[in-house]
Amino acid sequence: MDHMSPRLRAFLSEPIGEKDVAWVDGISHELAINLVTKGFNKAYVLLGQFLLMHKREAEFQKWLICCCGATEFEARECSNCLKEWCSCFL
Image (cartoon, rainbow, N blue to C red; front, side, top):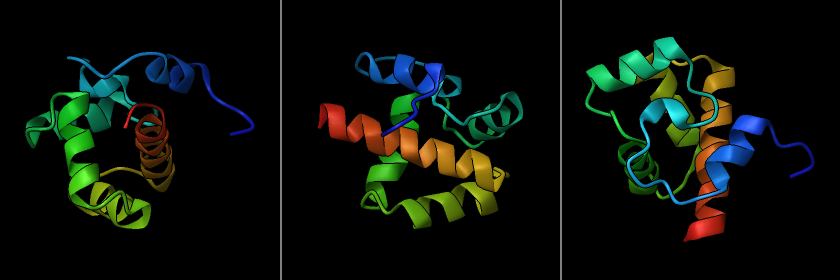
């Protein structure tokens, strides 16, 4: 990855642990509220959804947009963040 935002770099610097979903790169305050309301309060829970979708970025992005109210930018950044985390830790 050529350019990594500071937020993405911080997220990738360590295991997910008990981080709140708002730590995931691409998750705005408003989107975090929507996700928490739907039961996705922790980053590992959102990662689980990504893994249930077999790490298919397009499918995961569509789910974030349609079911959680993400923008296309947020969905793209979030799926990229989770994909990169998987590359580092799985």
